[in-house]
Amino acid sequence: MTTLTQSAGLSKKRTGGVVGITGGIVFGMMMGAMGMMPMIAGLVGSQSAAVGFVVHMLISTFIGVTFGTLFGNFSKNYANSARFGTLYGVIWLGTWPSFAYACHNGNAFIYD
Image 1 (spheres, rainbow, N blue to C red):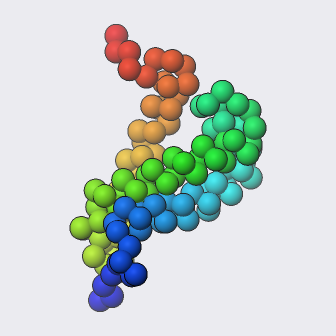
Image 2: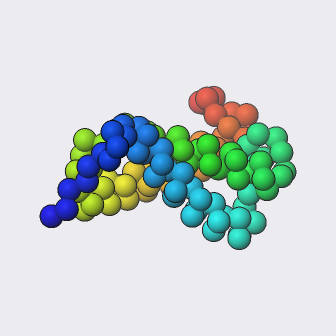
Image 3: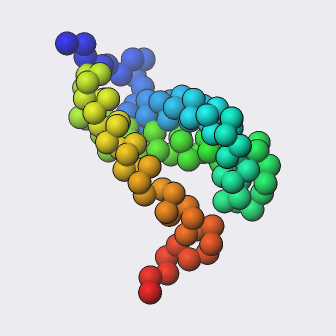
């Protein structure tokens, strides 16, 4: 079994950030092709696709860093990294859109 090591002394957070950026670029290209970047830019009050891409990359980096922080100790090999990465991705996919929509409408922290 292949073991993942932290090459060149990279911390779990930095490694997670690099992975988040890499995933963000790939997913960002798909989102850009579907015309979703202006919607992402709407989170900060813009309609620019470039602003949407920057916002998307900041979110992707944050997600990668938090993955490295939370699951870095469990991701000792490629299989575990894939399992925990998939689980973490599904959690974000299920929670982030609802939270972002609520933030966009100004009622993220209002519970009735």
